Length: 145
Image (cartoon, rainbow, N blue to C red):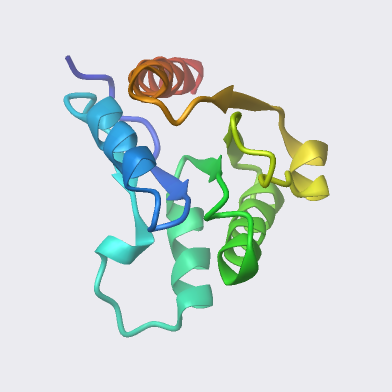
């Protein structure tokens, strides 16, 4: 199934590279959509990370952010807030998901100001549901452009 060509046909995925279950759900959701889930760590570049992220967000149609115990601590949290801030400043649509079952996931206040987020469960069934939700969200996102 394909969509008409609008924008860059890519959405930046803001996440922790330690969250294999989230990465897998995103890959499965985008399979066959004709859109690209852009993972910065999958690209080899000689550009400084901040500059590369700025370029990618500028070229992307939006951003999907995932808040998990791995992504809301340390440097990863800083990068996710940075990515969401640039996306917001550029007028890009920001969608976010938060891992429900963990009390250690602290939603950055900034995120609460720019978008709402949906919960997901890190169980097998929860990840299947997340995959379907991501696919629906991407389809809806591109039908609105």
